[in-house]
Amino acid sequence: MITVHHLDNSRSQRVLWLLEELELPYDIQFYKRDPKTMMAPKSLRAIHPLGKSPVITDTDGNVTLAESGAIIEYLINKYGNGRLAPARDTPEYTRFIYWLHYAEGSAMPPLLLKLIFGMLPKKAPLPFRPFAFLVSKGAQTQLINPQAKLHMDYWERSLSESEWFAGNDFTAADIQMSFPLEAAAARAAATDNRAHVRAFLRRIHDRPSYQRALHRGGAYAYANEGGRPAS
Image 1 (tube, rainbow, N blue to C red):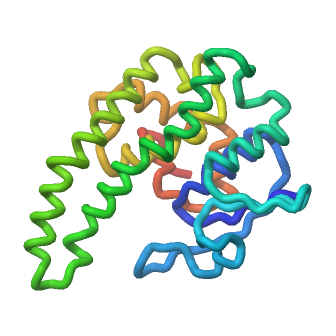
Image 2: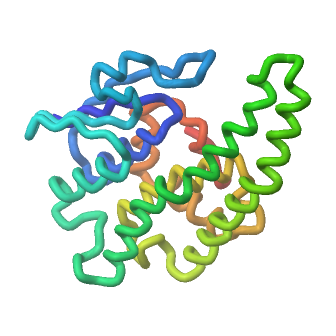
């Protein structure tokens, strides 16, 4: 049996969605963020030393696995039976592998930096907040926002060439890419003047499997990004 160690408002929502797409049975172990730090609780370290989410455990093989991309590859390879991945030795499969790893390796770092620097003025001691505000504004204006825009324009151009990231068929790469696009829509106005990004978000949010994952996983802050009401 697969168990998803699920942290609220996190990347683990993608794993629930993938399992719903594959129609696999699974259990959920729920964890809540610390309301002060917004970090995962220490109890997750009992499952994985880094205490991060997502993590899955699979009693079939005694597997404990972290990292979204690794989890997706594991589930697709073991349980996919050809679903949600292009045929190997095709151009689409190369694109599939690229987007699967690009999502966390390249797309998320600018968005994470934007989140951190956006929080910096509020987290700084009161006497230093004006200075922290200037540092935050300078870093975002000069470095972070241009990088975020570069990636968001890249998504728009890629989605203008095919309906999905790996080609004309929906794959697990689209599940993996959902979180960067949802986060960018919330933090960096990704859907402004990017019709293909907006359409992608609407398509994934309309999928029955996405909605089932929301029902099982609970509240998810990014569920309405791209124009679809949250459930």
